[in-house]
Image (cartoon, rainbow, N blue to C red; front, side, top):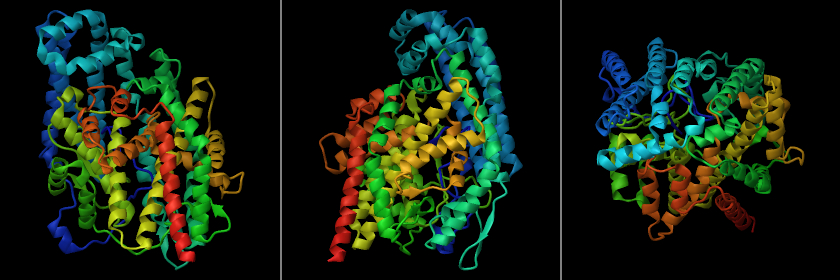
Length: 623
């Protein structure tokens, strides 16, 4: 999962505090800890850079009222602003990743808080910029761009600002909004600390007599155990604990929803979804088409659940039966092997891509294994433009860990390629294209694993994993997106929402997607508290991009693997483009229009083909 550094988001179902056994000799050959000194040698150096940022904020104040004086002054102010933002990105990344190493340590938390305060000063100190750009106007800015070719790097960001004229306040209004920026992450911060560090996790005793703690990593690990009674025990205890905090999480999420609604009104948008998508000029039609297509194709998801029940030997599927692997196996993939598999899988992307990936792996760009109080999940932080991306994993040696490895390095390579091809002003990229890079890597990994598989059992393992990936990344994220659209719309209309109300709304959608009414997957009431567990909801209208991206990524990967002329180049050009074009238009120009049903229908077709192959293997075995 890609993320901007502050705030930090988690990958669902990843680990926290789970120890993994790995060979000591292998650890000597491969250092599994990232090297944050690539950012700053010590905290003192970070603090010194904060002082430089403050000096730049003060210097930028001299641009107030003078941006449009002449082309020279215009360029100086834009260059200063870009350098200031670049410095802040690096400071924030160091703070966020130091905190991620140990969410219970005071040092990292203080750095995050100091970075947030600095970010508020930055927002306040530069808040006049948007209004002044609009006051200068497109015509005069056009003459500046024509007169000074070095300003070309700012053309796209300036266009993005100019088109936002109807949603921009005057300088006083923008300054007022910036002053409130310091409080903007309150709900998310409370969620993050409670769900990662302070939650009183339950313990259960499994059928083998082992007592386990069901923190987030424990839940991820034990929800897939083979003993069905144990799975039910895990689900009942874990979701029962979240249910105990339903009221608290309801308050935090409702506060976030209200903030998003107020932001939309202040910015003169008709609703929260339009405001969120317009930041990157993504048509609302993309969001609505995704949800329409997933609902139209729920029979394919239900087919998967019926196949899963058959393969697991179940007469009735329950919600706690959706995670056990379709094929049980004891295969493990130590990190060195996982890296080799990933590198072999991405060879179709070319030698240059492979060489850059190898350099990153060897240069301590990632933190591999779980530790107590380490941030759960997996993410890539790519905001340090002059350094390199940083990748956090909680690697546990199974095949899913290999898939996550490939996913996060897809983000890492996207950052590396964009930074190499673009100036800072257009190197960053939105989530809409970010998740295409990660899901394309996952598709390439699956193709590689199927190519080297030596038995039907291996093929079933990888095919089953792919099915679960499509369920989790396409249908599940679309389900989340539908929930988000619903609750945001309610709050936009002035409705109040409690934790109980959120559980009821989520439960209705959850049951529809899983065919509870039709008897396909039965879902207990307490499990509908799952909405409270999803950290992505604190970043409005984020999750739908996983689903759109797996649609686009699947098409790109298929074209590359088929050797279609120009397919690899078109895909890599999307990655190299950063934010030099609007993301929907960029992907559409590469051949994938995500506002139409076709990409989503292709994902559904792929899912049905995988099930066809699994059923063919089963039929051969039955003969």
